[in-house]
Image (cartoon, rainbow, N blue to C red; front, side):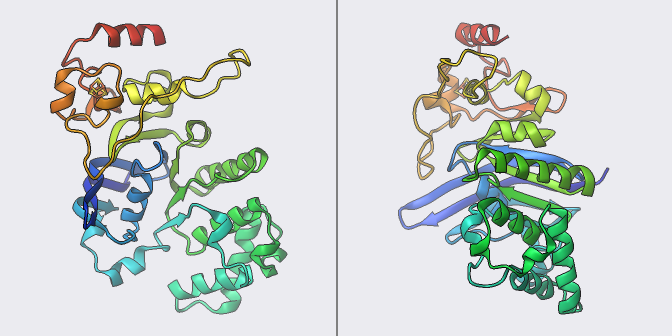
Length: 336
Ligand code: SF4
């Protein structure tokens, strides 16, 4: 199977007068062709920065400081802006966060979609582009006649579907969906999740789903990558990581998911403390100020990612067994 996307030691900073915000610090991961991968973490952990780095659309003053982003062997970080224009939307596209505001409310949807298609394929005629738009509306479960409407005539769920159509308009192989269900009601969220699943299962689209919601990942993805403060702390198959989270941050995230099996007055666990200021991140393990198992080594040495089980990578000194902690051992036993 060919690799669709390979990120190697990516480092992204927002370089500001008051210092460098170290948004992404040496992260590496692969997404294989046809795979659906969830990128999970709290707001500000760098999930969207990863997406904008792949598309080379980092907002100012963001800069790729180091590392590589390979798409089928081509390093996107080496491409000129002109070369990148040939890849953006045609090979890699994105469903942006905030569908409510992403479409121009006073331009008919068909004009916004056909313009996007024709801009990226100069040979295609307006009539053909309109036919593509109508077919895509049908694919996402909307009446093709709706292309004639204005975005202000659409509900939130319809706007999100229209944004998915925009992302698919140039027939990309890899789609990034950034918080695609945020601000939608629960029923519409479920419909959008079904639609994304259909894109992966039936069209073979490779998907990177950015979310803070682990339950959304469990619905759609086969693999999950957990980020904390600009670093990957754990990654693995959804089944493996959800049933046996090894990083204390992942354990906290999973413990905070409400369960229908528990009583209705269950108290949800939370992770104490706040994410760090990335202008001056903690030394060693970036999670150490919030971790209940912190040891001296955690404060000084950054834990490397280690494959503790086939395909299951964890960046934690304790999980890797470099230091002993009775609390951690008990914590794991409690969980099991
Ligand atoms: Fe906690 Fe140390 Fe593991 Fe970091 S390395 S998550 S501080 S136990």
